[in-house]
Amino acid sequence: KQEVTQIPAALSVPEGENLVLNCSFTDSAIYNLQWFRQDPGKGLTSLLLIQSSQREQTSGRLNASLDKSSGRSTLYIAASQPGDSATYLCAPGDTNAGKSTFGDGTTLTVKP
Amino acid sequence: DTGVSQDPRHKITKRGQNVTFRCDPISEHNRLYWYRQTLGQGPEFLTYFQNEAQLEKSRLLSDRFSAERPKGSFSTLEIQRTEQGDSAMYLCASSLGGDSQTFLAKNIQYFGAGTRLSVL
Image (tube, rainbow over all chains, first blue to last red; front, side):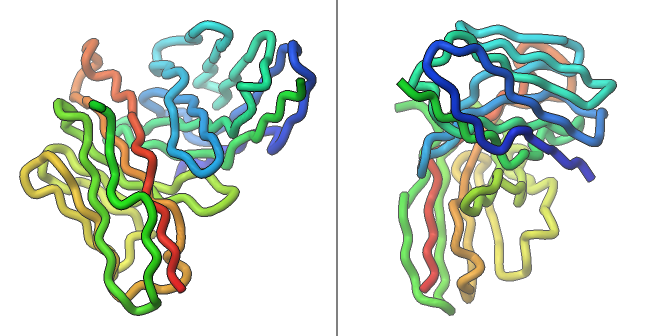
């Protein structure tokens, strides 16, 4: 059974800092891995998806990496802004259904 | 709006009542997923459909839960004899999945805003 751990659980940084969120998973037989953002009381917004054959994906100030063999992914956020404050969720997708197993997220607060 | 839509957004019910939620996926998406999320935790998988076939159900989905996707388009999730422990956010997602790693088969999941259930 896939288990996903996200560290740290919460992070507070001043505006402008670069930061890294960590995700580890126990079953490396994944189809892909998605990073999501969730604002309080809202649904999930997909940020980046990395296929199992890829090592990283970039979108704007976000860069996600994947090391499937070691069961790790990181989300790098450059030049953080207060609008980045949210919970970030990591979700590897399984090889058959594509269903995702989620970590409990990292809650990020960016202070002006 | 061509995203995933869920209805209702909020539902308050008394213990023992039945409730039904609806999810309308992105129109060309063949896969539809239901997840449940409680406060402070990540979503947990409940079940998924490929077209109209329900292909997998989590052990979290007790006999009181049933999901359908009768024409391979919208889906409903029904909870019978609700309990206080059913209080949660119920999230629906859809994707375009395939058997081979073609361009279209990226299986990016798009989520709806969720239905928040409160059982009193």
